[in-house]
Amino acid sequence: MVKPLRKGWTTGACAAAAAKAAWAGLRLGRFPDPVTIALPRGEIPVFALSRAESGEGWAQAGVIKDAGDDPDVTHGAEVVVTVEAAAEGSGLSFRAGPGVGTVTLPGLPLAVGEPAINPGPRAQILAAMEAVSAPVDAVVTIAIPGGEALAAKTMNGRLGILGGLSILGTTGVVVPYSCAAWVHSIHRGIDVARAIGLTHLAGCSGATSEAGVRRLHGLPERAMLDMGGFAGAVLKYLRGHPVARLTLGGGFAKMTKLAAGEMDLHSKAAAVDTAFLAGLLAELGAPAERVAEAAASRSAAGVLGLAGDLPLAELVARRARETALAVLAGGTAVDVAVFDRGGRLIGHAG
Image (cartoon, rainbow, N blue to C red; front, side, top):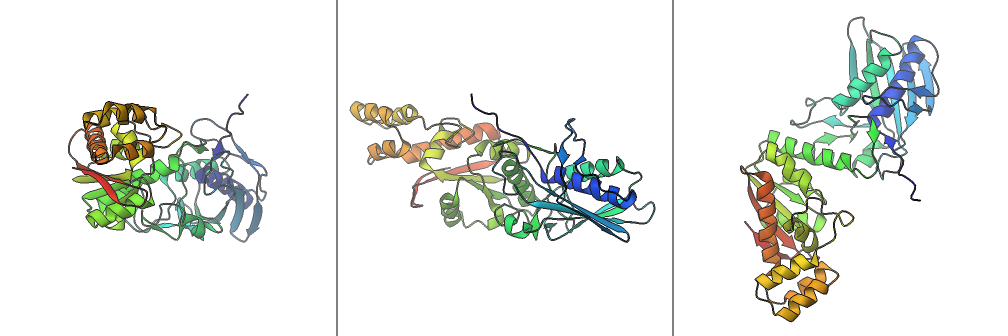
């Protein structure tokens, strides 16, 4: 029997737990360890403290993030929350400590200059602190030691979040391999690009196709969306948040999946349909024996090799563009660029 994947907790949930413990240390003189919090969907996770310290007018607690079985870049990071008493009636305010970023561009759900602590986690932190003692008049500073280095592995820089990581998590729960943080970054990238006035964006499946698209169109870095295999995340979000023009760039195999109507282009989600490619070869007038050989092939690269001088990659680009236009349902012009593994443009439509 396959063991089910273990869920984990977001940085927001960890911050809420640490904030609750620190607030208890400040208001009640003792740190609950372990500390429990209530999440928006009813889960009651339990967190052990990695640190608990206090002084005159402040208290600090830490929690080590457990992302479960998800390959999260912040798994094992320590989320440290310092709580300071504030004037009566001042409410709750937030600051970014070392390793937590600051918003520098419009388009995110936080104002420019605010610490990158998202609205969901802010609400969870407030609820956790109110469970100890209300009203909450305090300054909460969140730090993640080493967070600035970890942020270099995320899309925060392109989103204009500088200095570290974001504190994220609407539900507080990390679902293994849901890639929710990646999809979130794609959506926020579109929001930021629109807010700063960019009208031509590009979603690319990897570094090679991104470099090719930038050569093709001369786009700035802020216009580039690290799409990976999440074509659906780009197209469906742009349907409701349109821009004038979208370029989709990727390798032959991934663009073949999009041409066949797939929205998730990852290898684990959908295999390349070589029978579909064989059908395209037939449309292009390939001999029957070559079409049959293509249908029996086990890879997209194998079929591409059989195409010879026939413009198979060009037809894949056209069909992928048709898929994208159907999802977008109007309002955005689309072109699709297909690259080989060396970064050479082998198909372009639109």
